[in-house]
Length: 196
Image (cartoon, rainbow, N blue to C red):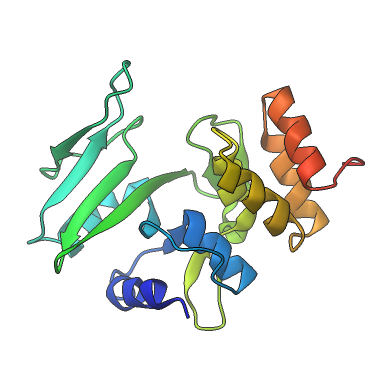
């Protein structure tokens, strides 16, 4: 179980800086079961460690997605060691015939910061969780917050099932962090958190 996560762990354990599994695999690690087939595996690091990541994968081809386009076109550009600023946050690294997707996360001295709204923060000590096998993954409340942006059917399923294992503080943080009132109400209903 979790073979792709263990494979990434065997590579990234040598990185020497915080990293974690993100998105669908993070949900599976939180639930301690594989819930579906995933298209890929995404890992996260903090933006301030991007140059260390560049050096770590020194001889590998590296790309970033240019999220600056206003027309929704996302261009893949070769990363040539320049420091990447927001809105760029998505990297790809060619490694042994595969592509590793890396998402840059924001933080200050004490908190993870939501890329889409810097007023939304979470204490850095709560951000990275670990499985019994010491696989680091992004905490459930942040993964679900990221899923509230476009709310596809699988995101709705994830919010409903994952919230059953979350504690009240995690659910409250998630709901409080959603700005759009319609989305907030939908998530409140999905998490059965009508009193929060």
